[in-house]
Image (cartoon, rainbow, N blue to C red; front, side, top):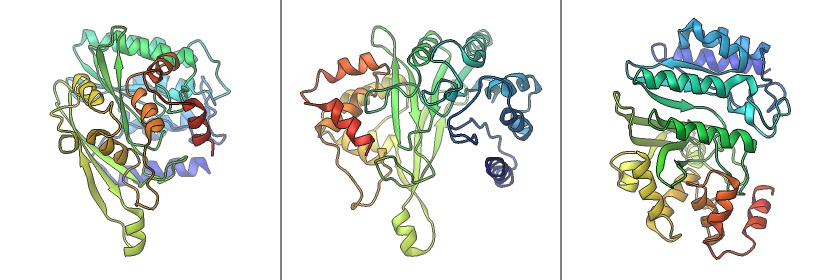
Length: 335
């Protein structure tokens, strides 16, 4: 069944966008046994290469794609895309250990970033499961691998212009900071096309990103959504503009500094910026399904903007006068 879905989605993308390169990454549901990705050559990786080969258009990438589902492509004379398989670091993946370097992906990543630096290329990194913590204060990646990915990203922050992830089914962003608290790399989490939400109902969302083709600097996100309730009433689907980052937040670009400035403006739960963010976070659901973000919720959401380890996240929460916040969010996400 997974193979049929794999083929159908690939063929649909190729027929819909025949002249557009697509750079896919694995999601945790892409295996017959959910979440279980082995750090070695598998039939899944082999099948992926045979279907993605025309998009990647570089036979040198076959070895790593078939080894662990990761690869890199030169998207333009100035810009490189690195596609990681972060499910190799996922806590629910019992095919890997909680330390080390599954499939040699970290070693390869450092080499790829070093090469990009020498070639004076900028890099966009994309994968499925993001680094950082969830609102419950826990990382989805094993601690060692989460910390290592943070370390590498900071080490090559002069090369990495952005990181893009999915998985959480919500619209969010984070900013990586160095040991001095200086913002270094912007991290974007796109909402899902599926309206599935763990505890927060949301509409499907898709986005366009404007960026400088030479520097890679992200200039704006233009987010569209599908109002499922309205579509069911009308009997037809209509994608509409939800927001743009320039219009909603007054941002001229999406550099680490610009996003960090926005984060500081959202420290107050009643700020207009945070209210807008929360509405977009759940992709503008109908009023009957919309849940306000109270002080406990706000503290959790705010701290995960730039605190990407469990220890830093816990320290951030101490700045907020919120009782039993840990128990609250664990209960919230396990309902």
